[in-house]
Every structure is written in C-alpha cells, then in structure tokens.
Image (cartoon, rainbow, N blue to C red; front, side, top):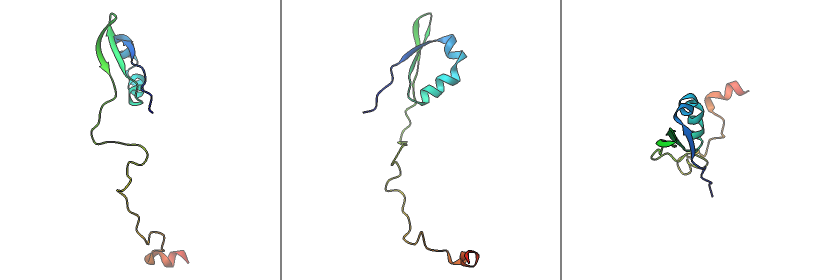
Length: 81
C-alpha cells in the first residue's frame, strides 16, 4: 500500500523563497498548505493528470516485438562480415 505523505504547513514568505524546492517535493507527492499570519490561504498539491498512469508496466499490451527482431538485416550483411 502506498503511504500518503502528511500535509505540511508553510508560511507564504517561506513558500515564495523556496518555491523550486516545494515544487520538487510536490512532484514527489508531498502536499503543502500555504499560510499567511498562521491562517491557511492556499494548497499546493500534485496535479491530477488524466490518462497518465506512468510507472512500471504502463505500456503492457501496447508494444509488439516482431518475430524476426533478432534476425540479421539483409542490407547490413556486407558490413557485418
């Protein structure tokens, strides 16, 4: 089971100062609540991308390897001798 990271609160100044780092962490699955004077004003979370599964096995059934894949290419035979 995939563990969901805890939502972390970040002040607006810190978010502005460290936006690149926060975006890298968000891409990795972390979510943030951005606050001003201790009050939540925005949420930074990974984008939900439709139709993109990604990861291991996501091309299963979509790629076919020809039966003669490992056979020598006739046009290349003279270069291989």
